[in-house]
Length: 241
Ligand code: GEK
Image (cartoon, rainbow, N blue to C red):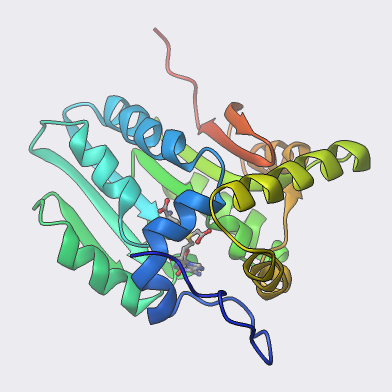
C-alpha cells in the first residue's frame, strides 16, 4: 500500500508514532525513506543465518512487520533455529503474525527495554535504537552484552549524523532529493521531518562505536553506509577462523 500519511496538509503535526495508519503503509514508507534499506535487510538475514549455524536463537528487536526476521529465516534451512521478533506496537506485531507463517518465528508485543535476550547468538536492532531516549542506549547495549551467548553478534543499523557540518548538509540535501525522486512531495517531506524531530535523536558513527565498546563488545565494524544510514557488526568476541 502506498505511503500517503503526510500527503494532506495537517493543522498540527503530532510526533511520529507507529500507529495503524503507519503500519498499513510501512513497507512502502521505509523503502522510500531509508537509503540502503533494501540492501541492509537481506544482508542482515544472510549474516545472521551464517552466525546462527544449525541452532540457536536470534532476536529481532523493534521488528515492525518482521522484515529482518523473515530475511534470516529465508537464508536458513535449519529447523533448530528460532527468531524472536519483538515490537511494542500492537499493530506491527499483528501485521507480522498475519504475514509470517514460518513456525521458527515467534512474535512478542513488548518493550525491548524489558525483553531478555538470554543466550541469544544474534540480536538485530535495525533502525530502532535511534527511537530510544539517548540516555537509555548504553544501558540497553550493556544488558544485551551481559545476556547474549559468549559468541554473540549484534547487528545494528541506525541513522547517523556527520560531525562535519558541510558533509552533514550535503548528505541531508541528497537524502531529500532522493525522497523527492521516490515520489514524495515537498509537503510530505517537511511534515514527516517535523513529526520525527522529537522522537529521533541521532548519534555520530564515532558515538555508536564508542558505545559498543563501553557496553563490553570487543569488536565493532561499520559494514555498510549510504549517506547518513549505517549498519554495524558488533561482536562479543570476534570468531577465530
Ligand atoms: C525493519 N526493524 O523493518 N520496544 C519495542 N519496539 C520499539 C520500541 C521499544 N521500546 N521503540 C520503538 N520500537 C524494522 C524497522 S522501525 C524503523 C524498525 C523506522 C519499534 C517501533 O514500534 C517500530 O516498529 C520500530 O521500532 C522502528 O527493519 O520506522 O524507521
